[in-house]
Image (cartoon, rainbow, N blue to C red; front, side, top):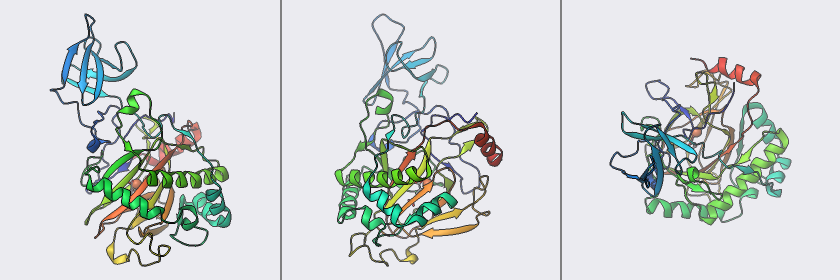
Length: 374
Ligand SMILES: O=C(O)CCC(=O)C(=O)O
Ligand SMILES: [Fe+2]
């Protein structure tokens, strides 16, 4: 009851047709090239299988990774007789790797920061808003808000780093959702050391220094929130940068949700933090008007929508947050239904998902279960 499922699929999106898109597969193949960090395709059949000595194990070379397959039992391990990391479907001739919740795996304690604590201290209403509605929004450049959390010039640096990644073709549309669900291009950036083999599969890119500094600032704010509300947050090993081109959108979804069928959460995400990086961010403290509303592209938040509502019709209030550079949004990954409205211009953001690894209590799980049954 309430056991979390290890899954790299992160959201509970709904397709345009209103059918929840499957994100609940226990087994996914995680592609290993930069372009497909969150892919869920199968191992290419032409990957080379080779006998390992005179044992019953075959080694499988796939991209830069080596797996060990035991055809008689269907086991796929990180070494002959090692840890199970997948299964071999002899009939289909496919190797399927077990999904890993890469944000939760190896997550560490959050680091506190004076800046994060000062921001929440100076604006207690932010903590109250999060506790009440699961949404905290720090406007860009205002006294005691995002401006005091992010050192001057940092937004410009982060945006430049992202533009370099974009120009290098490092962002890819090959996340695990369909094009009818979301149309951004993304890359994952490693924000902590990754040592074990399964994590290696997530293939996040090295995090440029400005992005890392911004992530640390978000961590400091998350830590301050955690201290006040006891959210049990951990710091994940990666962040995501995303670029929505003109026409880009992401349909209403939650970043985590309870799957009544399996009795598990889809992932370990607990708190979503997004920093917008759009042009104008570093203009004289990110003055208003840097993202005119006619551009579209807002983050639409459906406050207090009922857990089974996947469209937002039951929302008590709808809040649109325009992605002016330097805006910071933190929300409850399990609770807040949100969408990215179609944008007319390129829209850049950096996101971090803070995980919490604790098991749910039976009570909470039961409530979620009944609430999300469809
Ligand atoms: O960029 C945004 O405003 C939100 C994106 C989002 O919802 C997501 O990546 O899950
Ligand atoms: Fe989201």
